[in-house]
Image (cartoon, rainbow, N blue to C red; front, side, top):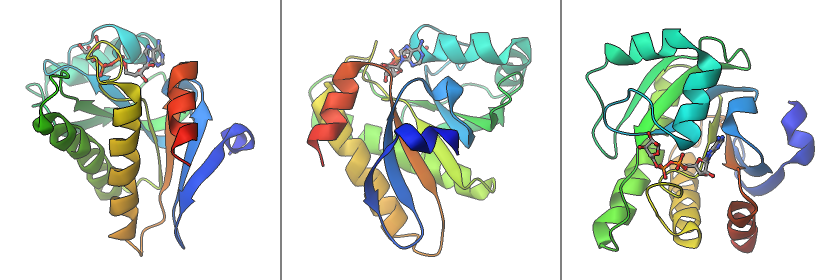
Length: 181
Ligand code: AR6
């Protein structure tokens, strides 16, 4: 995939890789891009707004049929006018509160998104920094939770080949992931 030229592998096992890449999930050539949504699933600002704008009205129409999504859970839709992806996985991160539950909920977002990707035959998935924008999760902490969760997931699915991308929209996100290496 073209994006791999600018990506850095930060972890791999025999079948799967985790890469970091600078840019927007919307532009990723992958089976599934992940949306950092809110529990209504009816759009919003940040990456959610960008995804809905790029996907077009068909996405909102499908989202209306899903009855929302609870924090930590994930739901899947088509990608509509985003032709570089097949699916959009919508997950709802926690609004950062500084409690230990934040990390559990954030980890659930990553785990449930990967489970859903696998159930739907995906072998590549691109994540934004869930909760790290409007929802206020400190980037360094969120990067650590996301990396550990995805590492655990690929290591507990040793027969699965999954290319995982962490898309760093802002320089501060890229710095945080680079520091984890
Ligand atoms: N394109 C790509 N990535 C972006 C963009 C964009 N235009 N804007 C932000 N990001 P955020 P959250 C990245 O705030 O913190 C929405 O209104 C950003 O750099 O979009 O989970 C929802 O409807 C970061 O990596 O999501 C919810 O109400 C990531 O997207 C709420 O915000 C997440 O930042 C969710 O807040």
